[in-house]
Amino acid sequence: MSNIYEVAKRAGVSTATVSRVLSQPLVVSRATRERVLHTVERLGYTPNATAKNLRLLRTAGLLRDRHSSQDGRDIYYSLDFDRLQHLYDAAGEALRPMLRVRDHAPRQAGNRNAPWRVLFLCTHNSARSQLAEALLRQHGGAGVEVHSAGSEPGRVHPLTFKLLQEWRIDPRPHRSKPVEPFLGQRFDTVITVCDRMREHCPAFPGSPLSIHWSIPDPLAVPDPAAQWDAFRQVSAELSTRINHLLHQAGVA
Image (tube, rainbow, N blue to C red; front, side):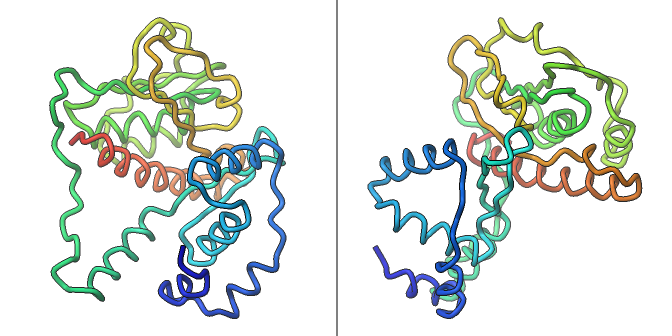
């Protein structure tokens, strides 16, 4: 394993910054610590080396963390994929110009005979899961069959409709739906987009891939003027995650 300061230097981070960050305690909940230790065990790293690398990733702007809205002691980590792609391209240019990846378009679907079935879940199915459904359907095209639902469905928020109209997506088919009609169906991937739903996600037949995206609730922003900005930020994060998900799944 490379020395942490050598890695920092290649990432453009000063040794003084690394020393300062490493000296700061990283407090996590028991659940978060157990997940980190499980990851450490699978990777074969020591806990101390993992903690140092997590801090280095945060310093380089690659790692984001946010406290769970369900349990404030729990922390969800996520990579900034756009920042990672930028650094990857920059490293390629520095090593050899021809190594730069210029075409980031999603790969075409491989040997998939049926559409990739995806279900987005949140509590009220009013904002985050609705936006995720619309974005994946728009970007995935015919290779994707996507749905969304909630454990306590209410109504689709007006700002959700406003964003859909901006994206030139017909908002009329979008309605808040309960999760129960989907429970007997088979999905390839089930994605929870709120922390509360992650804790109460039902089981689905066929053991689909289960993913959790800890996305902030734009409705938790009390100021109406700031709420629209929150919706835009959520949609931008969802768009980034969905684009990389399509790459990973090999669906265009």
